[in-house]
Image (tube, rainbow, N blue to C red; front, side, top):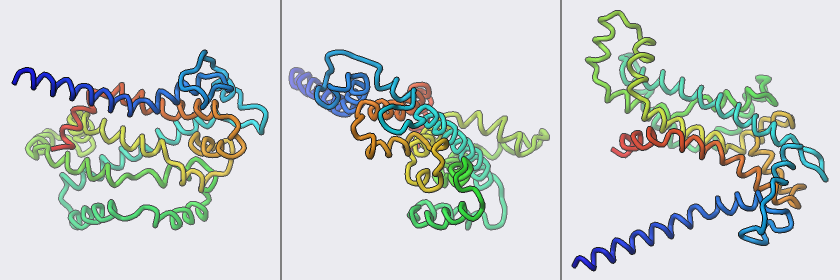
Length: 276
């Protein structure tokens, strides 16, 4: 029996290791390909030597074809994603707290509308949103990429459920001490919401970071293109440069990886609440 249990445990560890290798291999291959000499890209899994030529090509704007602002596109992605994510967090916190802790007429109806909208195909609203951006004068600006993505119904739903778990007595005690609603949110509610905020921040940041279709529709100015859009364009005239394409892909995934490492502890705690 003991030997059988040890064998099962060993098999589980082997299986877990194999699955881990399968999941991590594409990212490792991407990194190695970005550091490989151009003549070895997609020809050797492990290059014979490493070089930064692909990254230098990106940072200098490229050569051999029309130069493109790769480094600027990376910072455009960071700026647009952070701006949209922060706006989504602010709106989600305020709306979620209002639905969870404030009593007003129509709150249940509003909550039902949010639930319904979460299951509504977002692609249906693509054309109306584009027309609004077009006729409001926001087309080809950073606002066109930020404002339409400033609300996350999923984040509102998550915050609403979490805030409902906070005892009403705590809120009432703060009111008796003279605290206003904004003070209660910033001094009491938010400090208690670090774990769930980490989960929401990581997911909406990742969702906005990989956005492609909307950014392609509303921005045509090369100086404002995000890295996603510029990377998608590489499959055309840049098809002969697979090394820089892998390097751009590494830059695209690096912020998400760094954020998960930094917030791993809060992420685990927040997932415990999500899975309850």
